[in-house]
Length: 463
Image (cartoon, rainbow, N blue to C red; front, side, top):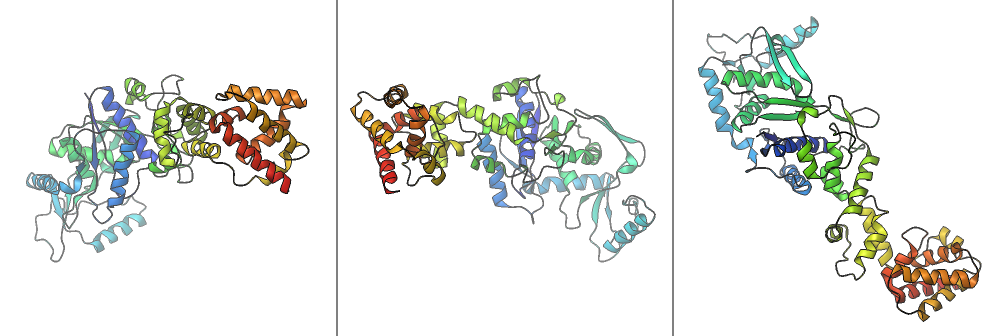
């Protein structure tokens, strides 16, 4: 049974790169009936945002990634971190460093002049003299001085870092606030994590965290560092490319099922399969199959997936979701025809809502270009004849019923279908776009159809 986590900082929105990491961690736990935990890394009190925190939790609720137990907040665990700092100090595995800012600046300038990597030189590592006055010390952990730090990464393979690359890094600042790599290692251990799945921008934090694990005698979890998501040009994903707030995807009309399906395929695959239900993802996912190379964000692929889920979603669920986009059709007597007429053409819920609104609301104006093309010649007479046929017809309910009337006028007037189709479409919708004419008429009914035709005839007369 695996125990995994996602640990965002509440300093900004949850973007899709973070959501993908959370998804991989969630799937890895669920695949083994394990636990997925949510930890908020909010030790940087000056940068924390309640709004950002609420946005993160809201995004998790929207996509349906449930977590076990309560949310863990690092800001409420300072006493725990302090105990471990004191333990390391007492055991001689950490020490107080009294290096001033001026000394640190001078050291870095000297190293830069020698073209050396900037690093702490350990000058207070074994200090037992009188502390200098006026300096609040930081706490540094004693990193190994020789050998290598080696760990097996589940994605990238064996990683070997020379110990000389890891200096005695700070684990508590002069004000007592513990640092990132220290608290992460403690929390991951105390939370019982077996696997840590995260972006490969954290790869070189791992040796430092291993130093903490070893100093405290903690077991080291399995690490999986996932390559970043790039844009279609192979560069870092930006807001313009899609690296935006997860909840913006909801606003744009994307379904959580489509977004998760899209994200799971950015860096993981199962044969040539493209469509995955959540249950399939859980059953098939193994973090060892995560790709080593970066993946590319493709909006067309996301739109294709979203369209698939819209087409195959139960109507009652779709009706409920559309309420968030200003469309309320729960009591409409032609819901199934309405959805069938529109969902095939919609890539997002926003587009679906627009198409439904277009059908249900009579046009208040006509697209000038379309009207000029459609309302020319004998269009007025054809529309008038068609309205009379509709009025005289009996039992018009289904699209097929209205289609027969369309066939009848084409036959009567010996015209091509376009001669009735174009003016009728503009009369019903105000433009040339939209669903099938027989479907539209079946949805709005015979009286509304005739009313819209008569409005168009009046418009043609006054032109």
